[in-house]
Amino acid sequence: MATDASLIKADTNKQNSPQKEDCDETSIDPADAPRTVREYLDTRDDAAFEAASEVQPKFASHSDPAGLWAAARTGPAFISHSDNYLIDAGHGIIADLEATRSTRQAEIGSTKAMLDRVKATFDLYPEQLIANTTYGTGPRLGWLVERQIAPHNPVFDKAGRSDGTWSRSDFERDAENDLYIFPEGHALKQFRLNYSGPNRGPTGKGAARYCALKDVRQACPSKAKCCPDTAARKITREKHEDARSGRPRHYQDPPVRHLKEAQKKVEILFARLKRILALGRLRLRGPCGANDECRLATTAQNRRNLAKIFPASQQRRKA
Image 1 (cartoon, rainbow, N blue to C red):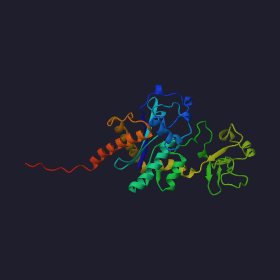
Image 2 (image 1 turned 90 degrees about the horizontal axis):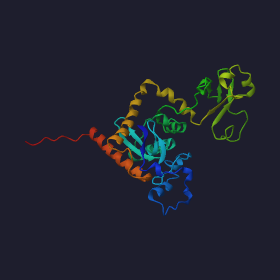
Image 3 (image 1 turned 180 degrees about the vertical axis):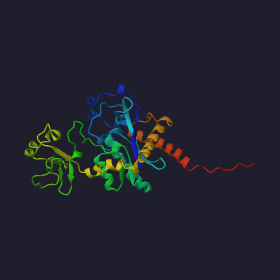
Image 4 (image 1 turned 30 degrees about the vertical axis):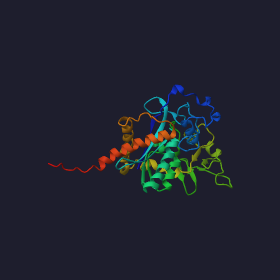
């Protein structure tokens, strides 16, 4: 299977969208509010909308507050919803969809929800899941690996450095002793004291942080390449780092290069959705309206594709 998301303009106007800090949502009476506002208030704790990210949007629409001010790669920003597809990469049939807010966190969370629904409805569970870099976060890769689904996508990684200093990949990982070894041979350890809890330590958030001794780093001849601006080098390792570390190598293997072509099938479906079915702008508002309209359009797309796969039998005309 393959997954991706696309932005669809909401039925709203930026001129009627005030700044987010100018909106007093606590004074809204749900009984007197319009339907779209009531739906927005009901989905504030939903992982697909308000609860997906703590970042506050730049604008808030009166007519469709669930929409988000976002920008595509090839154009200016606009208030939009995200249409998420989960397709069968072999035939291009859409197995499930979900309309969410236009944030990376909401789009990643929709993948989990769609996989669970496909499993419960059709008893389908993919062995491989194809996606782009947006879905290459550590928690998502770890979630797929735990469910024995092979993720095929580049890793969303910001550990690389462009200033000429050593990055995390230059340090050797010693999993047996739980430490890192940098090129000079010194060790970066996570703990030098005994802690009572598994989440305690230098970060206090469950993420492991490996650090070298200050005296060792000050005497190191390669300090200019390692940590020129700090007293000691530190490396942070997330919980799902094992799932992240194997993705770049696995993605570049020759047997799975054809997966890039499978990812294009999702993009073709979105292109047909906006050009042939003319769903470049939603006509319904609110979370339910966006989900209903995207689901109707998906039904039309699947009927077109299924008609090509299973054509109707041709009957001979009588003379």
